[in-house]
Image (tube, one colour):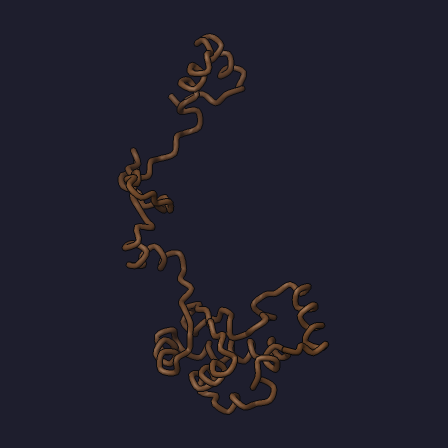
Length: 196
């Protein structure tokens, strides 16, 4: 395998350049937005076939053999132009339209859900990502579940975090403080006192 000096220098420069979505190493592995505001990620790593698939999906088969974009190297050299081109094309249809076109043309992609969509996602619920805990004033409150699973150990239901100072007396007594010393710590605002 031979590596040309030009490619070697390019790699060195790439490693020192801060990358954003506007100057991505590969514009076919980047996030884009549809007309209806949905964001998604293209994940097209096959430099031989993926460019043609995307071009056909966006209705621009003429770009497949355009020398400015036809190879991975050409797309890298013109990455900002490719991203602008894809931004413009992908903003012309809703996500539901792109979903069908991407499937039809075997374009590899995935949705980038908003927080409200994550919380309502059936797969997230099926995986036990969310749980509910009982709040004394609000009742049942949804929260993110503990991500750690230990074989043979039942996962505990999430609990409300203690209020500031809620356990101060118990902790200070366990450390050997007398009630008079605890009251002095509260009075001098060294330790938070429990709400009364």
